[in-house]
Length: 120
View 1 (cartoon, rainbow, N blue to C red):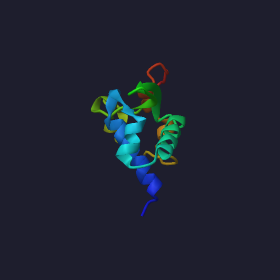
View 2: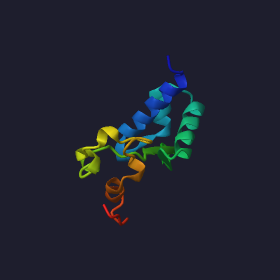
View 3: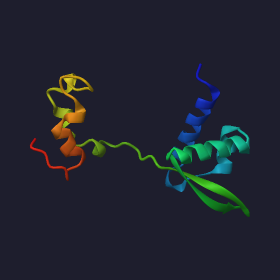
C-alpha cells in the first residue's frame, strides 16, 4: 500500500487540476482533503516549489488565502500531431541505447523545435 502522503498529494493535485483556470482556494483544498490547514499549506508550498502550481494571494471573506492554479495543461491530440515517431518504421528499436535513439533522432529534433536546422 502506498504511503498516505503520496495518496493525499495525488488527490490534491487532481483537485487543483480539475478546478481549471478558476483555481481552487487553498482553504477549500484543506476541507476537500480533510487535512489540517498546516498540512494543506505545506502541500501547496511544495507544489509551488516544484513548479506544479501557481499560488496567487487573494482575499476571501475578508481573510487572506491563496488561489491555487495548476500549471499543467491537458494533453490533446494536437500536441502530438505530426510527430515523426507515430509513423516511424524504426519505432520498436528506438529507445535510449537502442539501435535508434530518440536523443539523436534528427527528425524528432526538427519536430520538437523547427528552428533547429537538420539535414534530415
